[in-house]
Length: 374
Ligand code: CP3
Image (cartoon, rainbow, N blue to C red; front, side):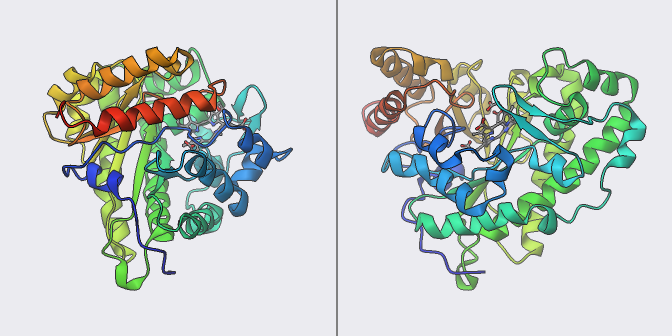
């Protein structure tokens, strides 16, 4: 482990732990990505996953939004993808320009499980992510915390079976309803890898020996396709594995000599599960824009920090609209001085004007710093 510079801005970590803060911290899902011209410049003609596997490039791209929106963003999120886990498990995943991820050989029948690597050595298969994290922690010079992440078991299983994005989810629904036991076997295999993968991300970003007590990172689990499950199936095929991760990850981190870090769960579309998610062992629950902020805050009732949730589409609106949406959001979350992290309800989309993103961040800082609203 190397010594990293001390943290200058730990607003995100304090808010995640439920402490009172001066203003709500902010970061944006997919903040490093296609809406930024410098992303396209750095990526050049490289294949997307080649960029993920290149720690120098991944680090450069991670830092881009933090440097462009200096003093506005309160966190960096490591540039990578949730689909590196299926790759580590032995599957081929390609990123097709203007189409998205594609698996040439998806899991179509239970016997395909035998094709997966039964014992994944995450340090060997995903060492490039850990190298990118260590490098980025050093280059950040303590400016802001670095968020690590993983896909959730249900979302990863869906990709591995569908073979890419989907509208009808025919294949994964076939598994869930025809092969529930094999589905659970796959979910368990993925969960085991996710726990190891997240623990190693924390180790890669941990401070030096004397400072291992410092919480310096945060891990977010993306269950982007949670909303495809019914409330009762969510309880069978997603929630138990999300809980396992929140229970086992702190132990896996401690076993590696580090202190556990705050954890966030973002289960997109699972509005019906908010109450359960508040009791699922995470410090932070991410919300998409289907939630009314005040209603979500009432359900959470101080059990967790909430994160979200402006419609990413609002960034295509006028400056006045963005301001109104920001005021409505932060007001709905009670002013945001406790138990709240500002974000969009999902990733920022590629056609957003980076200057409109800046306006959003500036307005969040202005509104979030006001004292009158609480
Ligand atoms: O800035 C950040 O948030 C960090 C980087 C990040 C990426 N993907 C980079 C990326 C993160 C956190 C992800 C997570 C991810 N990847 C999720 C969960 C979050 C979500 O959006 O629900 C999912 C579902 C994926 C899978 C994935 N990767 C898809 C569906 C696509 C194509 C469509 C799209 O929205 O971009 C990707 C590609 C991808 N991942 C790009 C980036 C910057 C675009 C690649 C390119 O064409 O240059």
